Image (cartoon, rainbow over all chains, first blue to last red; front, side, top):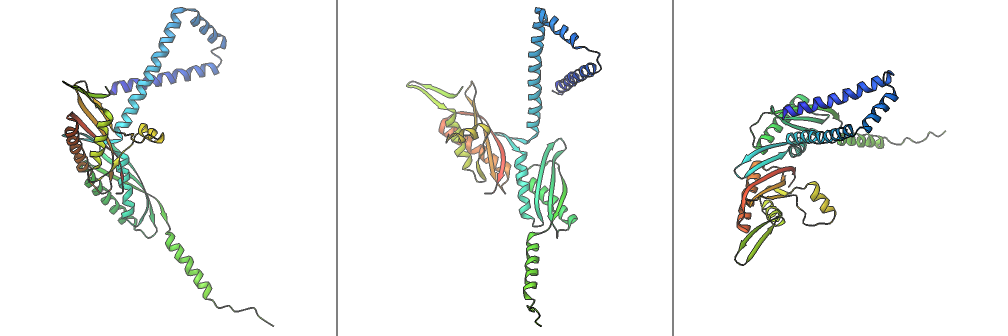
Length: 202
Length: 117
């Protein structure tokens, strides 16, 4: 399969290079529109060349479809974690694992928002997390705790003993709205307790 | 092949793929930890069109009358996925064998997502 994928990539690279070269040649005035026209007229006039061109077109379409299927199939295969049981195969969608990790945001109060991206490859399961933390959080302690919890939760729920790599990216430290609200209320109260001193009368 | 045929002296008994799909769906949702059967593009479209019993469960019946079932599942949060999947496979196999006497080859489970129970 790898041989065909390489062949396909080389084929597409060759086609794109040929198109690029043709455009450069055309822009340098080395190829006149008349030459192109003559070539097309010659190709159209000859029955054999028309058949060859038609077959080449059909072959190109077929190659494109099969190549697209190979690529899409590869992507689809990589989007699941699979294991076999006595009754058949069990595949776990990586988006299901992402759902599971997203639920962890509810467990840890310091985490305001959590966006996971899970990839499964030969190395194991790689989890990239983009987190928004609340302002009072101790980042090293919290991220280490989050890594431990995520790892143990994935192992517990999936029951797999594959290597799990967890990368955390702290994207933002958010101010807690509750705190802000309290502060505003406090300021409001402060202002309301100042006695009205009235306007000075002369 | 759209259905499983078996002939006896009185006539032919045909079991449609949808029957296998329905049995599998009911048996799968009986298991603790299963939230619901998942969806695919086709079943989503059919549901939009008002088709009530559209299921994303794929059923294949081979020439030698072996049945292969593929079940997409949404699992409840907090449950062990392999245990739930194994429970589903066993329950679906039992239900199909009991109700249809079909020969079951594979019951493949595809966990599509996790939702709060």
